[in-house]
Image 1 (cartoon, rainbow, N blue to C red):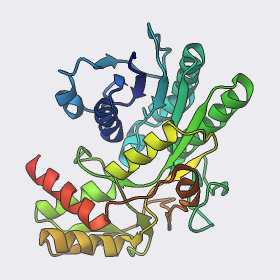
Image 2: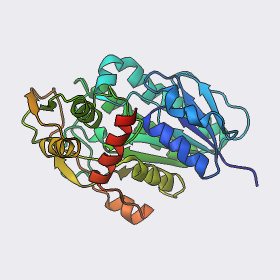
Image 3: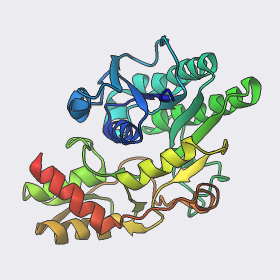
Image 4: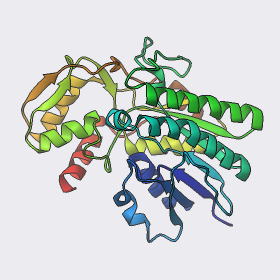
Length: 310
């Protein structure tokens, strides 16, 4: 039986590279598409020798033509950290708007399943806690995070429009904070920031009073959730994340305990930084039979070890 072909945009990024690796292990043929704006060829170096893997250097904001069959289109291409979208606001908007439009067109032409990597950022600075998929969000469209938030909100809207008008089998994964090996050291997000500071014997930087909360999902759990969603019959958005919630200060103390570093310094809170972020994963549990299995402590041990070696 011929192998199913999966196209993964952003496939050389943190989550995308893990997804490519996972799909190859499940006997899929993988076409990885990335312009390496924030992704890295080093993330997929070990995959190049696999005959079921191919790489296309391409900016998804421009139309993409693929010869042959494509059975699944997984759209993960976008700058995804506050540091990235502050530097690349227009590219972020284009990846979410033009990129999603182009890839939905490809999925339509190929009669493929389309999966959008959306984000918990669609909830903005939430007024409902934890955040269920039914919550519409509290987003500042012209604030410093607006380019990412609104790009993903538009991406969700056009994805559902293609589902309703063109009957494409679409999926929307609302991804909450995820961490693990292959994160960029200068990513700007809390996990690599804290780990890099700790390993360099520098104080850990906490913004504000550190009472803002986040929830952290280990990468292998997230990939399992994405895979189950990809193969499911679910078309409405589904939260994927770990509902275990920590204040940033508590999280910093975990890193200190695991690395032996000592000091925390405080800096002003960035504009529109969400005060709380925690997924309600009832829908994923019910419809996908999915929930995280790797504890935050175990995930951090693995991630710290990877950062030490790399």
